[in-house]
Image 1 (spheres, rainbow, N blue to C red):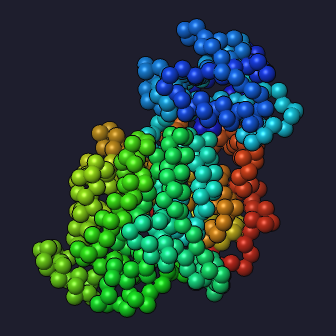
Image 2 (image 1 turned 120 degrees about the vertical axis):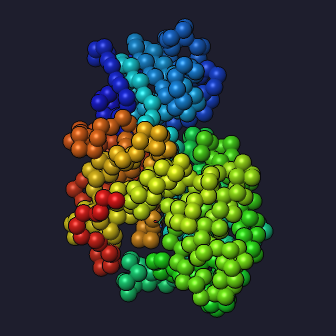
Image 3 (image 1 turned 180 degrees about the horizontal axis):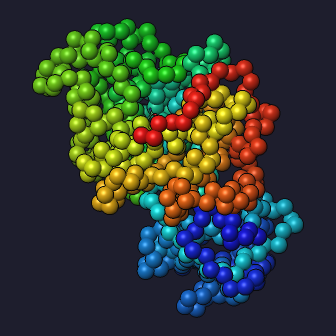
Length: 552
Ligand code: ACM
């Protein structure tokens, strides 16, 4: 059993009346009322596997209480969306959710209460399964609680993505921002453009470490998700109340697409027919040609994306991320075709051309009942009216967007870029960027104080971003992501005080229990004492930045 004070993310309130426990046994039933189906399926499957108990379907209990020796899930529309209440008394555990997502969050909390062995996939055979008598009331602070996975720089096979969805659900996170395309790889099958994956999903070799490193991995590298893989991922996520927001990055970060279809590039400036999928890291000058042909091509891509990521799969499923970040404009300046397009459209400059490009897809998506979200560069040259912004270059883009009435997801690189190193020590593997410790993430505040209440309401929430240039496999992704994602989950879910007043020592204490859960889940997190010998990467060049990051 886990102590009530060891839950992560911390619930809103916990009250208890003594030391008694409800001991589950062979006769304990698991029952669900209408409207909580997914929570029941998940809880029964998970707990049957971990406990070895049958957890048969039982009769519902009386009003306000579960039946005897029963776990019961119910819906109560008096509770807000995503909220839940757990009441454990005598041998009765009642989980009441304001909606199915709330019941699911409550089920996740119940698993934590059963102790770390409840996170295993089979029974160890020694535990007594006990729930502490208590009442827990809980609800999230933010609606958007996300993780961005970059599966373009290094591919995460489908099984790994499903595993990450489970890890997200265990931390009450509900948005997977799925970065599917970049210069180094195109990872989603598009039927009408097969070369996107035939050519664009693999590269001949890969830079090992920071781009200044002399090392190469000379093995061909690649992978992509088929249409059915994507459908499976979206359905698996939906069953866990996670919305998957696909990112198709335009007009920068597009060399893999140009390598597959050279006409997408600025072929009057560079020989796009000789471009290959990029094998190193950095900001790439080979951006899409701002032509009508390119627009039509990506409309074709997005038509298939909309089919594979249906709008009704979760609360944020209407969103499609179109990137918009780091689009170097040099080729557009040099290209006669791009300059002619600027003239034809009556635009002042290249920034306005990017704005036209993004605005086109904003209208295109809106006409199909969908919403555009992009990185904060989409603010440059005028932001399309319905668009939402992922604020990554500090807070300022998010502040400007919120003031202009746009929805915002706060993910400033200074706090929640999990590719940044976790410690200043020499043993950190391939150290990149500023030192961003577990405590730094714990003290991250998604809502900047300069926003008014009305503007602050535009902050949908927050997410951590996992860029994978130097994360070549699941172990490296785990190491960079955990334990910091646990801190992010508490920032996103719990009602924390102002950053300076947050009880980090208390969080670290709770993490002691949480590390046991992560162990049971098989997560290769960074231990508090530093990397294990095989988690180091001696001899591989990183690019650490010294000193504290700028606040804004
Ligand atoms: C980004 O980090 N380029 C969004």
